Image (cartoon, rainbow, N blue to C red; front, side, top):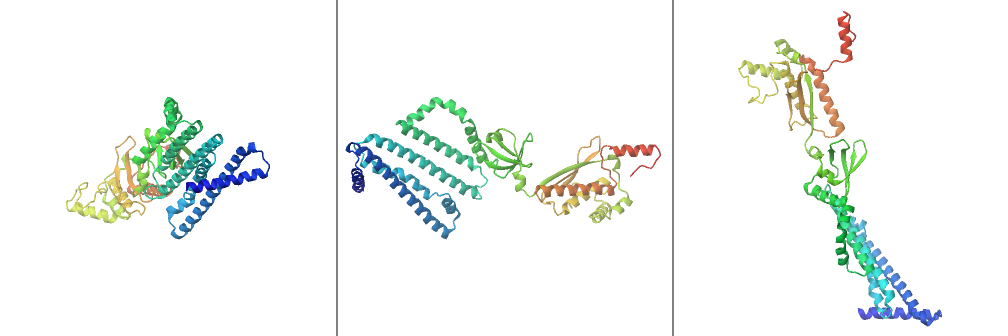
Length: 434
């Protein structure tokens, strides 16, 4: 192979010399001129070979892709990972052919060789970055890895490779060992720490985010202060981009998600429902013992007839247990209108088509306040979509507030302007306005 290369280079050089003689170029300038022409021809030859190989490789793998329909292969072909290998050929061809002629003219070949080595390093870095981008595309599209913050790690690897490439290029230009340059950089470590502070902190935070699975792309996250309340749309080495629900975009450094308090709603999104926890206050003066007449009138309310009759049968049989009830009737009692109301609301929620009955569901009374007894509804909406969730929650609260009057219960609220006007009319002995 070496003899063939020498023969090819010699024939090419003789051809160049004959052309120069035909053009009448002086003998003293032949070595310099023929060297320049030889270098240009070798460069053109190297580029032609690389272009043909790149085209052939891309064509071949396109044909293979047309038959296999493999998704990974499609990404590699679209990113030109296979054909991109040809980019490293031109400097290799030039480095192998140039020394065969320039035995006595080393000054020019020295600069050309350095240029070739620099080109080779840059081409290798470009190809490596292309390969890493394709690799990230493949991993990010898989079900197991699509939600992992891999983009920041890929960017870190690219940054390290580019940094090493810059050091190698500088060492080629100054003709010094790369290890000496790296050793010399130790004196500037403090400066580098300041310059790359965000990248270093971002890398450490990115590893923690990925290792502990704290934040994924698509998560709904909230941070105290109100500036961050939305969906994660991108995670990079230096920033986490969040689109708030008012469609504003907020970018925060990854380490702020590690060092501060963060609320991630992913658990809710992956669970069977979204929590509804609302309460209103019952006026204590409206709570009373159920009379037979009140019980009869409430039997017309949905769900209550069978419940009241069953409770009455239990009372007649001497079964007065409620909380520790073997039959599971712990919704409430028929002794007071509030207990009966509590039982009704619990049964209403269990039969509601958009409430998940498999999750915690209860109605309870909170600690009394100066305004009355807080009555709380605790359940989970089966539909987790924000708009649907708010509609379901509003529907439940509207129904409960409206039906409370059937149980002769009053929901407490502070007096409004209308209340004062009605009071003034009554004091004056006049019929209050509606």
